[in-house]
Image 1: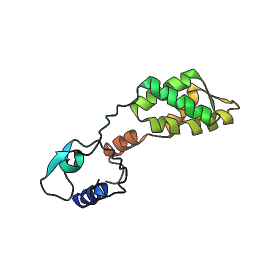
Image 2: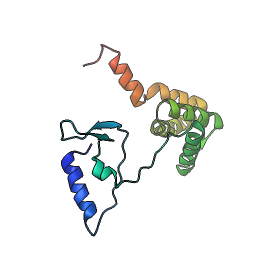
Image 3: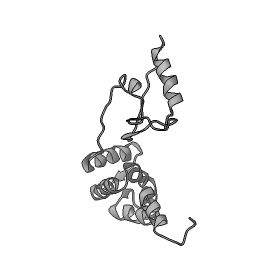
Image 4: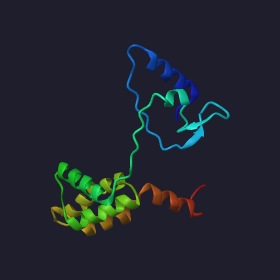
Length: 150
């Protein structure tokens, strides 16, 4: 989250002869620019700087795209995985995050190895989801429980 002073510096840097390439990533809508009291702007970026940007809209991955990404990641790590396990990981990616789904590969591979298998099965993924929680589920559990510190 950049403030008005940082935007002023960046604006000056973009005016220089050795202008840097700056990449912003944001999910903010129309909001107050940090460091100001009431200046509203799209993405919380000053209008004069916003006019210089090329905005690229991104969309979430589909389940099929997630399955392909996970398949590539498994191959890169030298892991063999059943199609049914890939399908489950794709569904998990949609429900939670792609990062969480990919992170389940390593413990699932270890679980398969412990079971004397070289291929990750659907049951390995299910076992890992019972042990490891994604960030959204963890936050929700903590929010709805009075057993934990607040």
